[in-house]
Length: 107
Image (cartoon, rainbow, N blue to C red; front, top):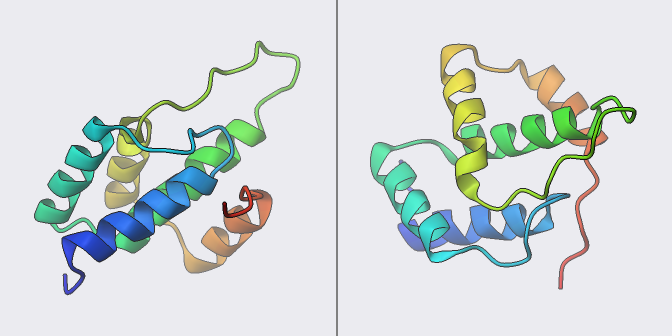
């Protein structure tokens, strides 16, 4: 991976803050988790895909079910990241999933 930790963290934290149901600012534990992901060599594209897939799943949840609480941590996305390592998402499906998630405006 050729992306510096600073650029990696900035890109992911900016996107994380714009996702529906996430806090505007990451916690220190989230920053440490990003450092671990960077050192493991997890591609930005995989994490971004996990962000969009998890959010799209939340948004498509049956509205008759109880509301889900707000996402509080990047750790919420870890199972989806692992899922995408096992079975990568086709590019065409990723484009579809991205179209279903409306990002919050930048501050």
